Image 1 (cartoon, rainbow, N blue to C red):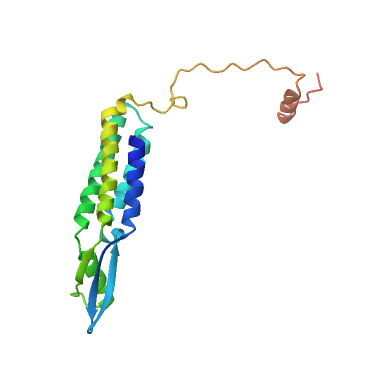
Image 2: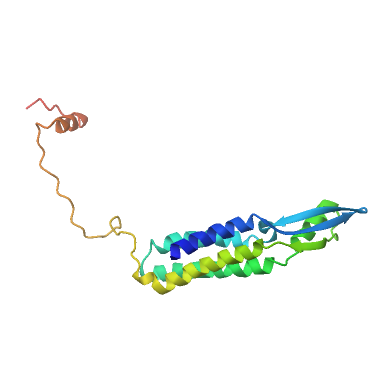
Length: 186
């Protein structure tokens, strides 16, 4: 459930930050032209935290013990940060004012008839899903299986014993040739 919530939350957040969050019109010499701002223009925080949350979501299954708790806390904070930044950007008009200043060449230009879309709230929902995944990982993560320790250093695992070499087997003859030995010589 946590994996699904986290992955879905990251995907929703990344999708929402690529959509139009606000729109307005700027006036230049008596003419008005429309301007729009995507979520990434308004704030880059939700997209960045969605990537951090996605990485933490993968890492929460790779670590154990205290490391898992720390990564789950990072996942939780990523979700909370996405929700907070998206809510703050939902009514922000400064990115459109910057675009109006660039388009008109007048640094004091502002946007009139400012309107906002629902995409910031979709990003908030994505952040809440990542937050939920982090809370689930904090609560139940201790009982989840971890990745295998098979390849970790220092494990005292019994090694497989090599089987005895049979010089009459064809693959052993080829291996001897690869080593530069003459398998026919005595």
